[in-house]
Image (cartoon, rainbow, N blue to C red; front, side, top):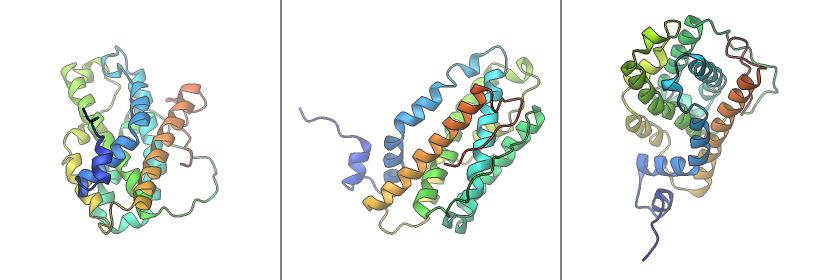
Length: 226
């Protein structure tokens, strides 16, 4: 009996095209990194207190604050519909951070990075906007638990905005249309995957610093260049 093919193999063979191929390639290529990061917040929505959620907000606020400006300086910014949702997410996270009394991001001095290529930017945007899928689930579960009453000091604007967003499939259509020519070219796929992997590493590194205490959720949360 022939073995089942992964969705990335189907994409490479041309049976998936456009947004479906884009999602298959990036989802399969980053599965391990995605699952590892998710595991670090396992059980957060069931906790009696908001400490885990504070780390979640601190991590996302710091990572978005580092990565969104890089996307705005990239070729992806030529498509406002691709970057506007990410700017809105950053604003929501900043509002949550301020409402919860978490210190504003103070980024360390780092060497100037070259502008992102379009495909690398698409990979990073995929991770940032894709985070709303998990945020939507978190929001609905926290509503069920009446978390606003359990955690009165918490703010949930980012989660609520994610729950009300147009949806990831619609956003993938935007990304796939950013530069549709030769979308399946191996070099372009590799660049998109490199961007997505760098984004996941960046989130993990920020969380490492928070959990190590060098950038606690109640203190400065330093960014790291991807």
